[in-house]
Length: 139
Image (cartoon, rainbow, N blue to C red; front, side, top):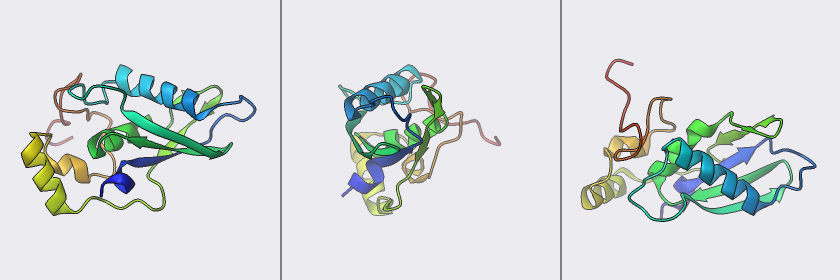
């Protein structure tokens, strides 16, 4: 039920670099982990799947909706000579509020409002992760 909310479009991939889905997945996992944008309470890498149907763009799937929202802060990150465009795909569908609230309550996960955002502020990281939680009030 959350798959569409856990996918991101990654555009402006370097051309002619023979970039494979595995290479892009490894690079983005490294970026997410180094910036503390992953949920360290879950074992494994945050990006669980990567597909590059055409050379100019690809799609990634992350473990959680919250990690997906946090990954939007990678928009503009450099790969080779290109600045990647990390965005919600056209078929994005947010998770219904009742599912978000139920999941947050059962899992002790971050504030349910964090899941609903189209993108965190540049100061937002995951609860329990490096740099802990939300931007201060009034920012």
